[in-house]
Length: 437
Ligand SMILES: Cc1cc2nc3c(=O)[nH]c(=O)nc-3n(C[C@H](O)[C@H](O)[C@H](O)COP(=O)(O)OP(=O)(O)OC[C@H]3O[C@@H](n4cnc5c(N)ncnc54)[C@H](O)[C@@H]3O)c2cc1C
Image (tube, rainbow, N blue to C red; front, side, top):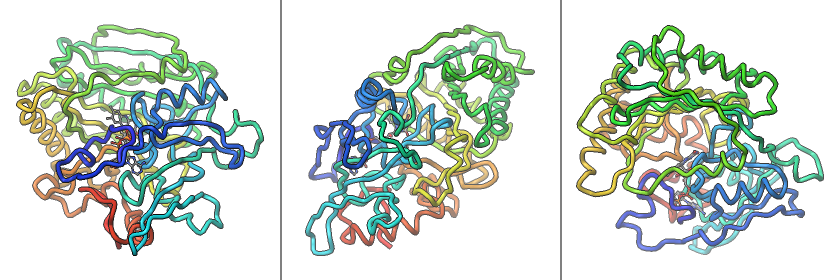
């Protein structure tokens, strides 16, 4: 199945795939009176969907930062964006899902599975709250509505969309020593370690730290807060003051601006190209040794791609108010999501250098846990919407922890049971698909 085509592995593009079910034309978005929920087709793309929801009802889904991601695959994996600290992730608002499944005799049937406690198909709904794409059947529709809101006004049934105050500070690589780099990253991580508890006023701040490769010239921190938050500007300033404290770095640029909601959500990632990215979640700050490894790779000239970076996006807050087994999305105690990317490149001849850089970087950052983020005091595993087949490859995962524990933790066994019940023939499969129990 392919909806928005943004899969970060070649699950729908590998030469083993013989047929594609293309859902991209099923992209309608409307308020469904009968279910009192917003109905979204799998082919709906983030930016036009947010436009429709905002212009129609003033609401939004806390889903992908990239405007071009398809909701078909995105919601299935959990779906987060900057506003998730305030509003949770996309599946926290998933009321129901319509799926075409294939029975043991090969006959397809359509099932609507809801979060209602008495729904006999509730297990299938649960599996769609973070179980990942391409596992159980073909999603042909989602319905979204925030749990616990009782109202006839659609404008209250999803989070309200708001204009943002944004501040971006950049530091030049020329002015950075390893010590100042370490202090910045450590301060940033520790800030979110301290300020991500559900309900804390600091969870109204979203932030993303771009630890860009030296060839980009600068590294930077962008953070924001909704313009209706009382004292929001002061909260933002405190974040920047705390992050730079003791770093002794010279600011290359410092900008503040107001960002209307629609401008914010229409962010475009950049031109498409070849990619190999990795991710991991953090419960606590990296150690200084890990930051030293990141510093070394960002200064490594075996690649020269300004898009290469280690990006740290803030999580926590509302996301962590939900029990890890209440949805298939298990990462309910992370405070940061780290994204390792060599950037995007154009030609196959550049593959080897880019892929080697990101593989070795990741392996070395997690050298004490077998090259992967084995859940422990610091690590919380990986996010299935950023699938990475290396986690299932013994050459790159030398820990005793299987790939599915990294992605799903203790929820994997239940996902396998749902798989057995709804896809007993394992019709829907790829390199990291749920194996039937
Ligand atoms: C540039 C970029 C930015 C991103 N930003 C974010 C972000 O900010 N936050 C975040 O959470 N994620 C982000 N992602 C990850 C994104 O959420 C996933 O790649 C997601 O799976 C994309 O969904 P899609 O429909 O576009 O992809 P597709 O390639 O169409 O599908 C992805 C997977 O889902 C399966 N699938 C697709 N449609 C269906 C369906 N209808 N029924 C069943 N299975 C289906 C596919 O078979 C495949 O396995 C980003 C990805 C990219 C490339």
